[in-house]
Length: 458
Image 1 (cartoon, rainbow, N blue to C red):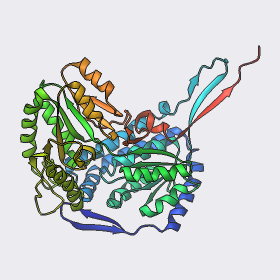
Image 2 (cartoon, rainbow, N blue to C red):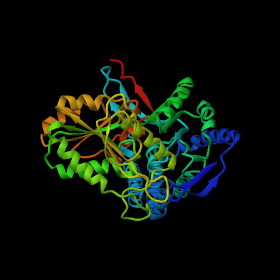
Image 3 (cartoon, rainbow, N blue to C red):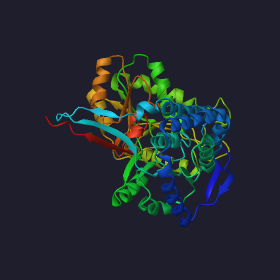
């Protein structure tokens, strides 16, 4: 079953049966058939439909925000922010369709007339997570629909109402029924779907384990993959300039969405001469954050997506404490639901502890003391992940030099990692393969087709 369980109350709000393997196979065939006609729809018409999606999303913003909050616990103010980003993605691709899909003229030494045309490749399977249930679908689906690919969308089993709502919006906007198919499918049936000759590529946002399994199956069947996986993003503090604003941004970067974001600033790496001041200010501010009702607009920290998630996080925290780490703040269970927990701040975390190496997908910040800038870079890069990073420092040249040496797909200087429709999103190492958004979101599942006319013989 796909099941909506409100993490703030623990109550099941809706249930939906999963599709049978036969229904899933039929959907892949329908998507392939729809591709033949969808790719022929003029680009300006596809762009118009994408802009229709933006209008509908904005018109239903409050309803969609409430779905997010009820299904996975995100505070309503942050859910509204997610819906705003979805609309901005649609507007970016709709407004810039001609430019994004324009032919690229080449100038070969032969003097031949040569262009590269960006063409679709067919049905693409998207496997999406629960933590940003509308944004991550839009980030994947909107550029591919604009390109002319068709979409098979397998969403997380705990956010079916979000999946159904987005499906309805796309079809209301003018996307043909089989050009975007929402699959309430069991994870056990995904291997067969990837193997289907109708499916031409797979995009997954999720865990390392899921990414490795999908990549293995896609590789076996020679299918293109884009993987946006975990992150253990460093936030490096080089000096005490504007420390108050740095602390505020660090708090938001770590504890927004209850820390359930791949680009959360999970590791605070602070130079020795700043550490004590930063640690005191950050810990004091974190201890003042009180988890609350996610439907209340004043709530910053809501529940985790499940009580089981809190248990998993506390296992990592307790492992660190048992091995000698210091608990500066929190970790208490609060409220009526076991999915709520207060922020945790740890220091003294060393390599033999799980908290040093694993991604902590919840409201836990790890503070590291760095001897100097070189040590800060060493700590930042001592990770299996390489998604995002943040650097705070008053010396622009120093901050840029540090950015050059960080092993990450995205680096922000004097700000925290985020997302923007016209900027690429993605990482390296175990954080994944490929990029989304901007021009990159169009290119990943495209055929960069060379069309060449030889120059006249002299």
